[in-house]
Image (cartoon, rainbow, N blue to C red; front, side):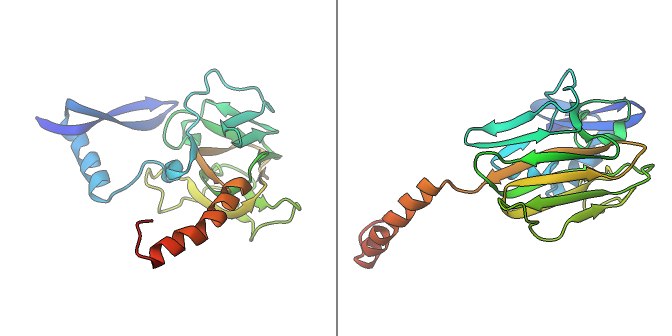
Length: 231
C-alpha cells in the first residue's frame, strides 16, 4: 500500500468526474490514485491559483443556492466585494460548470453580472471562468476604474475554449486583472446557457491612511539605516 500526506476522493456528480484532494497525514491511498498526487506535487500545481489573494472564495459554502440577483458579499470591511445582478451561487445539474468543487457563481443567459469593490478598490483580481461548449455566444470580462473607464482591454472567452494551463483541466480560463479596479462586468452573450466563475480571489488597494503612515515613517527608516542603526 501507499502512504501519503494527502488522499483523494473520486466521485461522479451530475455525470462529471470530480476529484478532491484532502490533507490527512495518516491515510493510505489506493495505487490507482497515486499517479495523480505525484503529478500534482512534482509540478508544483496549485488547485486554485487565485487562493493566494487576500480574499478567496470557492463558493462551496453556498448551499442552498442563492436567489438570482441576490448580492453575495465576500471579504470583511473595508475590503469587500459584492457579486450582483443576473447571477447566483450554488449548484445546477451540469457538473462541467464547476472548477474545483461542486458549486460556482453562474451568470444567466444573455445577461450581465457585476463584481463591485464598494469600499476599497481592488489592486489584483483572479478567478477561473468558463463559457460552456454548447453556448451560442461568448463571455466578455471588463474591469473599470472609479470614472467608469475600462482598465486595459476586455477579455473575451469563446464557447468551449479550453485553457491548456488550467491545472485541473476543466476547460476553465484563469483571468488575472490588476489596477485600481472599482468594478468588473461579466457579460454572458450566450442566449442558451449560463456561464460560470469559480475560485475567485482579490486583494484590495492599500488604504490611504496606511500609505500616509508608511510615507511618514519612511524618512526615519532610511535615516536609521544610513547611521547603521537597526531599522
